[in-house]
Amino acid sequence: MPLPPSRKKRRNTRLGTATLSLTALMDVFTIILLFLLKSYSAEGDILAADPRLKLPLSTSTEPPRVRLLVQVTPDDIIVDGVRITGVRDALSGKGLLIKPLYKELNAQARKTEFIARRNPAVRFTGELLIQGDRSIPFRLLEKVMYTSGQAGYNGIALAVISRE
Image (cartoon, rainbow, N blue to C red):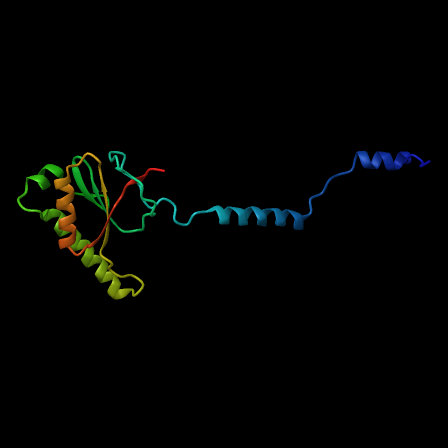
């Protein structure tokens, strides 16, 4: 039969202090850091939809890439966050070319080509992403796409909400 511990040993175990091992603590922090890095998305949401836009639904599953963004709201045409012209003005013009949009897209293309001459990692690809409200008339979308093509942006993609 085992003997009970002496009074001195009993008292020390009750009043003992716990210590943390620095090595074990560093291991825990390293695991947490690796987990957070693994779960972090470098892409994030490339597309920030304007609250005024109601994008059309689609079955497309291709993720968007970073491109020049043209937003067509029910009231305005916006390129990279800057209002270019109104929808009424764009629809009232004769022909398919929207002149203010054409000028802005040309300026954006020249800016990208200028940067490409200085930095070989950047190049002008002629890719454009159109965020169009689902209520805009097809005639307006046709004009925006035609104008984009005339300005050298032939890689046109339309932003949609994926219906899963």
